[in-house]
Length: 137
Image (cartoon, rainbow, N blue to C red; front, side, top):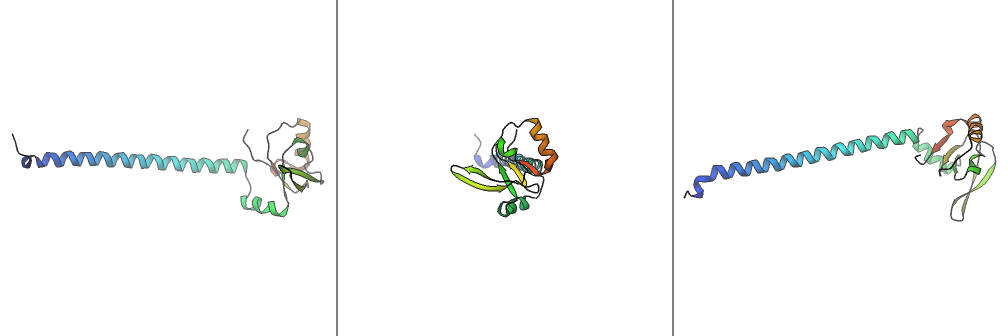
């Protein structure tokens, strides 16, 4: 039998190869995770630009200035651009008054069906760029 002292090169080589494979696995895992995170950020930005084409800061600030109107029901949708002041239920027994002006931004908070004639009337009154969709179809 050979002594272990004579096998130092082989043990070192096996250890080195094992460490290299382990490092390759870790680096590969890191690269995959980094690519997934990058593509997720890119997809989030695409979705944000699709559903919120305007300035998000302006939208946030306009909540407090009263120029954003939240739409929860088809009856409220039909009032877009009418200039009326309507109480909208935004929660359980929580109402908020909105002025349905032509210059307001409208955010549809619920998914509901609207007759084509009403939708075309709204488009003629204020245009599509003032209505934002909070949900995905």
